[in-house]
Image (cartoon, rainbow, N blue to C red):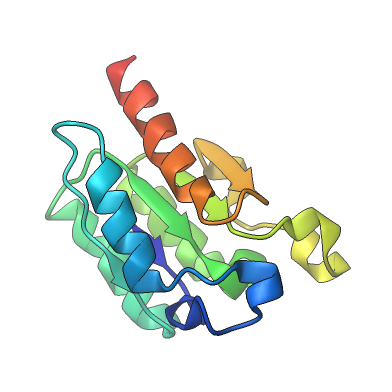
Length: 140
């Protein structure tokens, strides 16, 4: 479970857009509902290089899949896209808000075309949908 810039402010940043659930509450809730046999690891960074390095670690410490809310990097980061493509693990892109109902610059994602799925506008419940999506994909 990877979270990009400003997601450490969940629960405090624009609660009308992102809700009142904190990142810690989100992580606790996801751990509680993770499908049987699925182990979750959480990482959040406001620094693109740190996120890129964390994604690269998947090459040496393989995982079955990733869930990423890239935040603003969605619209700006070829580096994050390239890192995700390099590790070849399926990933689900999640956005708490409906990015398509927001500013025009938020409508484009550098990640969506290489993602297994994209979940937008479902609030923090989108993360649970992402876990279920990965579970179903991995069973297939």
